[in-house]
Amino acid sequence: MTKSTLRQAIKTRLENHKGSLTVQSEEVCKKILSSSVYKNASSVFAYMALPDEVCLMALIKEAMKDGKKVWLPRIIPGTNNMDFYPLECGFEITEQVSDGSFKILEPLAGEEKKFRIPREGKIDSGEEADKESSLNKSSFENILVLVPGRAFTKSGKRLGRGKGFYDFYLSCLKKNYPDPHKLIFAGVCFDFQLVEENELEVSEYDVPMDMVFSPACE
Figure (spheres, rainbow, N blue to C red):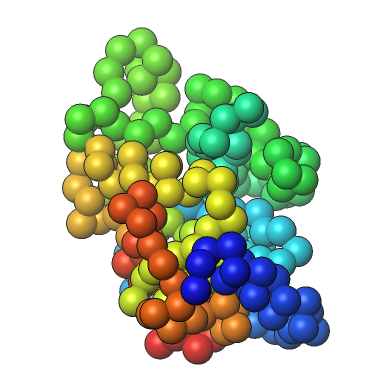
C-alpha cells in the first residue's frame, strides 16, 4: 500500500471512530504513565494534539506534577524544521501556548530556552550555551520522545503526515545525542492506526520508533 493510500485509509478510519477518540486517549496516557520508560525519563518531549491525534494533556499535567521537564514542539516558519521549548511549572499550560503553524498550539518560551541538540555528541559551547546554564544540561539524561503519526506498526514503523518535521528532528537528535541508549522514541496512536507490517512502506529517511503506545499495544 502506498503512503498516500494508507493516509487516506487512516483518515477514513478516524472519521468513523470519532466517538472513541477521547476514551482511547485516556487509555494511552495511562499506559505511558505506568511504563518504565516514562518513570525513568527526566525529560518528556510531548506535543499539543490536533483533533485527530491522541491527546496528551492528561499526561503532560501529570509529568509536570512528577517533576519532569516537559518540552513541546514549535515549527520554524517557512521550513520543515522544528525545535522544542519547555513548559514552566507554576503556570497554566494554556497560558504558555498559542496558535502556531497548521493551527497547532505551540509553546511561547523564548529562543534562549529551546532544547539545543548537541553537536558531534557534545553540548553546544560558547556564550549562548552558557546562558542556558543547567536548563538543557540537566536534561541530557533519559529522554522520552512521544511521537504522533498517521499510522504505525507494532514493530515501530511510522507514517507521518508527509512534511517530514519529526523524521528530520529525530534523525538529528539520534545522531548527535551523547548517549543514544538513553533516548527513547515512542509512537503514540489509536488502535485503528495500527497496521500490518506489509501495509506500511518506509524509506531510509523514515525514523523508526523504539516502541509504540496504543490501547492495543502491550
